[in-house]
Image (cartoon, rainbow, N blue to C red):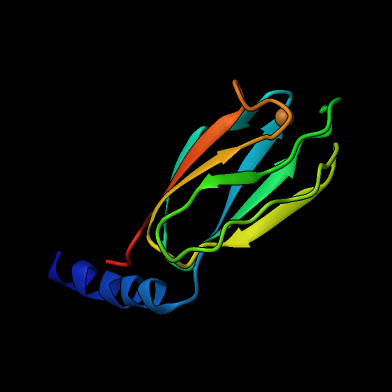
Length: 113
Ligand SMILES: [Cu+2]
């Protein structure tokens, strides 16, 4: 048991010091999946428009943490994608400008442990 714990430690330390992860969000006809996402500073969010999407959608930051730059994708269609690295901790509220009432998501960016 002592040996197993010892062997696992270096792998964990390596993971914590390497660059951020990429987290996928699917863009669908009038919803993002998931609608709530928690990531860490330095992670990249990659929005991917599904192959069966029939309408245009975008990714628009409605509110961002203090000091963070807002961003806005083009209106994209099936098979396209858009990514952003999030470097400021806090809460990002994202909407699709075409379907603002129903199509929104929240991303919480946490400081690295
Ligand atoms: Cu939309």
